[in-house]
Image (cartoon, rainbow, N blue to C red; front, side, top):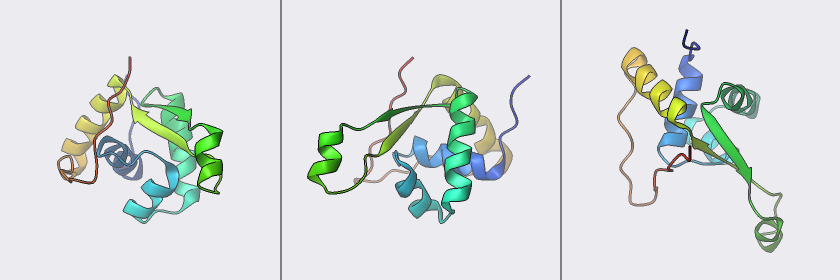
Length: 106
């Protein structure tokens, strides 16, 4: 049985699919609060839809900010966002010169 993906989770998966890789970026593009985005990302990571990794501390120090946790879709996450896109009629993947979709590693 496939896990149910809510509309907000589907939007977050679509944002990751479209190249928004860290929490603040996802919050900014979707207009969702941190209390929605971060718990959803944790649940999606537990479900195997996304994988995460921390950026090098040196990068964050150079930019005088806390380290960012970057997210990328897994194969299961790509399947889930495709199914959710049909169910919720989400827009197709973004095509923007400023974003490069991430590639899941499996």
